[in-house]
Image 1 (cartoon, rainbow, N blue to C red):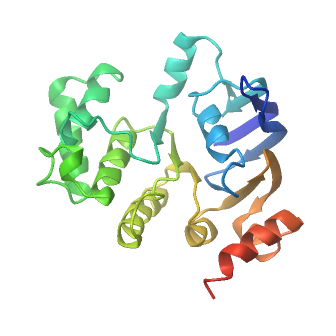
Image 2 (cartoon, helix red, strand yellow):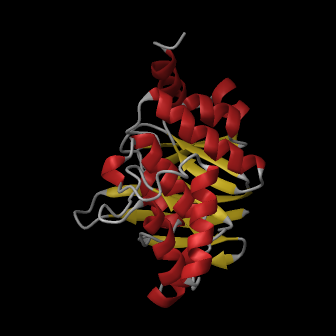
Length: 245
């Protein structure tokens, strides 16, 4: 996918600038957005996903500019899959129903088509026997697998993941990241906000470092992790690696 934005910024009502005006243009397939908490990572991802309007600037994916009106935004969002930090599942629906509902209500699938697609994905992700369970009866890792299944059910062109493992134990974190890597091997483009530096380094083609609302560094993952240029990135990686040597 070709991701491009110019003068993109986000300022909230209190006057606090979450994203400083930034420019970007590149052809990417897998991108990790890394950086300290509060640096603007999730805000940028939500703008890319059409869930949050920018305060200024333009953004386009594959030449299609981010619409401003709601009708255009709905069409834009249909081409994307989104996985949130806590999964974002409907608590009153079963795992299967969580996948079926957007297929029928948003994407125009029939109940039969949606049910078949949901069953295929649940089986694929090791949840074939758990489709009747509601989120409260599933582990954190299982919930995120359902969330990923829901996000890719309509076969989006791009998958956006906002710290999908932040609330998971290490075992479940590996589960979820393995699925994302498997989807990458099948050719699905994705952008992930993550604190899992090993995944960002080895599974993502490119990486972007956001700090204090600024796009400080961008390049191949090997460049970002092996040859950081800014003091901010050097310090960020140094703190993370201090207890992982």
